[in-house]
Length: 76
Image 1 (cartoon, one colour):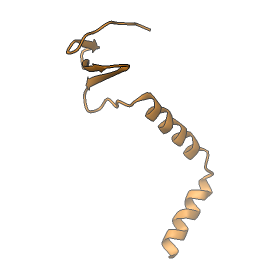
Image 2: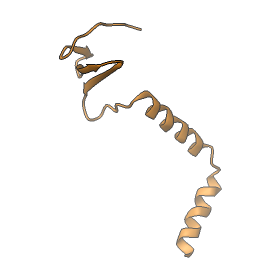
Image 3: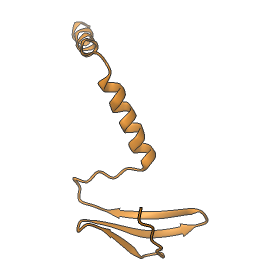
């Protein structure tokens, strides 16, 4: 892990396409701006973890469950 010290309005570059900017420091919180190409997904760690958990759960559902759900929707 690389640890850097930055002040407000200072930037960190990741590769050629991603820039992190320190926007505000207030108490124990730091606001960071992220500039990245639209094809790069940027998430907070807790959101990323939740997405991963949901994807894992969805992949564990038996194939027939999806088919049965579609069948029920179509027969209503």
